[in-house]
Image 1 (spheres, rainbow, N blue to C red):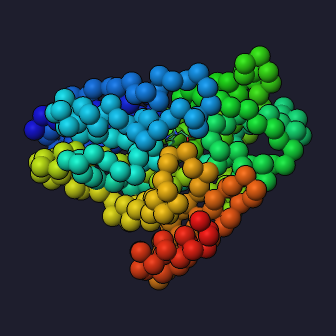
Image 2: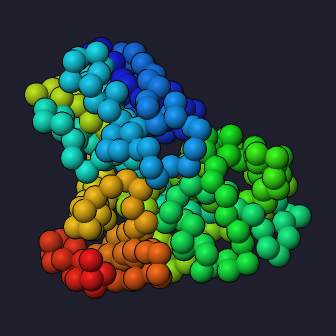
Length: 289
Ligand SMILES: NCc1[nH]cc(CCC(=O)O)c1CC(=O)O
């Protein structure tokens, strides 16, 4: 079967799709690849948080899928809006990569480093984990941000470090030599809902694609991501909410952790068990939002 794949144009979008593409090619499918520049890729002039809306990184891709310009989309799951257009369904959720955030620093960073991030979640957690740090906004794709840290300069001012998803750094295989890397545990910096996971989507009626991708589906990842995004939905959605949420499997069920980093402090909540709706509801009660 001939499948036209749509992704964002970034190196990360391409690298993270390659496993799936290789799998489909090995199964005898012919893959054509179209890269899209989304609104979120173009708009690099300021901090995230004001300009973006639902589908900032995905609208152009969804439109192309619905108009049959492409047949399959692969996204970073954490960038996908909670509500998708009618007619689009999940083709598969592959096994998740490392969900953690990493602090990547210059070894010459002073005690009061300047950290670049445009994520309210990372900024508020890190203000607690690194009380001496100051923060500055940084945009651009992962390799660009890393280069700014290597240069040590951002907008003519010093820059000592940044925070990036381990999944992106790993998938890109970026060279971190000469930099220090500090992985954060969930108690220091809880990742964004769905961080490290991918989502493949197709048109609802395209059963051939659903069939072609079913071996690549990882049900545990999907369940965990659904619970994390359930917490996001419960607090009203939005891809720039200062919300961390992480679900893991443990003996006897799931462990769902969430933290909302509001301006006056971080509220934590967690739940354990097997009833998915009850797990989300308990966390939402715990957050008190
Ligand atoms: N918001 C951009 C984005 N979307 C997905 C990833 C990383 C990979 C992932 O979480 O799947 C990143 C970069 C980052 O946050 O460091």
